[in-house]
Image (cartoon, rainbow, N blue to C red; front, side):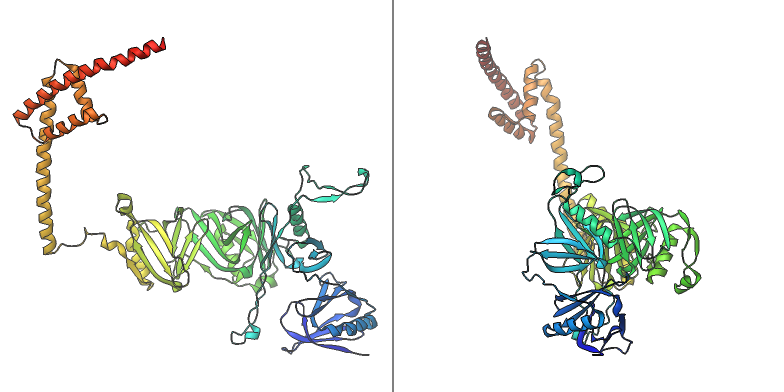
Length: 587
């Protein structure tokens, strides 16, 4: 048997079918859809072979001796190919084929273990699925007992929209494990008995099982560690989103954010937009990176990364690249001595190949590039770019003009505060919810309107219906205004006569009862207090007198006050009796 061939075989996780061929020297795989040379392997490097049942029929897994390729897989074998594969490996490479059963129960509870270079999830001792640690991009403690794994973004996939068989496949981007309990380890020989004991950290604190699993994955998967030396490192950078200070380490294919307690690796393929915007304080510069997929911190997603530097801060940087490597990147220099934001943005632009978007031509009433606005209760800075809007806050918002249906101005309420500010509503063509920016200064209406009209954005100004001062009056309006003014004049005359009456009453009333101070006190208290039923009648009478200041009415007032004085005197004597009784009870 010189050569053994298997048809319709997948290599690794690739979507292409090909031909797998074995001989005494080794084996090779070649795709049907390409004329490239086949991928070949040395047969003496095979250490172990395993037969699995997988989604694409059966899989042949070969453990290799090389560190750079520890495992090679081929999918697509039929069940009848088992004996043929077993004889081939035994005859050519003297390797025994091991058959391993998979769990098909479909349970979502089991045991997660790190086995070599994989995370194996086992159910009743059988493997349900395995995850290569090389695909794990990050690990986070999402909850008290949850470990969230993030996977590397998929490589660019050549696809034809018209060919449904070659459409972009779905990719797993995240998986969570719920791991309750505490971390346990085997007892030492000095413990006196076999078994397990609680695992402790360096400070003597107990370690939860979730933390132990998280730390093991970070060590085994080398999360944050990047192959090769860094190109340049910028220390102690203030990052606003997610909040903290990080070291920015640039590598040929990724950006690493290293903090005290968190560590992120951002592949350059995840960076799809770069913005360089000055803050409205005119003292700092912000660098905004749009990420897809976003990075995560716990259960929070961050689709934007925002860093900030003082405008006058400078840095001296030298790139760890050879002349041949620098020649591969356009506009990249070996040494930089310039403001920090310029150096970092230029390095990012060269390594990622993405354009850095500066602020647009918009200028507010003070001549700055943006305006202050609120989204709900969050205050931030809104920038008008050449092709869209970006709102910089804890969670930035990016809006493209091409996906905007209309933008409208409106004012809520009629108070003084609302007269000084207005709201701006952005209606999207693709999103269900609108974006509403509030508390924008009224003086920004004209600059924003002029800019949006220049960009051919449909603008609706609902504030013009409330602003009547600037609109000239027609003949009918003038007639209505004259009628209103006459009514106002009549009201002013009535109020003026009423004030005179009130003034006369206040002057004459104390003169009537100068000798009796108690009557004056009762009169003043009754005019300000309508709490008791006996006083309500007098209040009604007083209110009747206030509308007429004739002399007969004033005489009537004197008589009623005299009667009230006698009545109050009588009630005052009666009011003293209960006090005496209470005093006796107290004795």
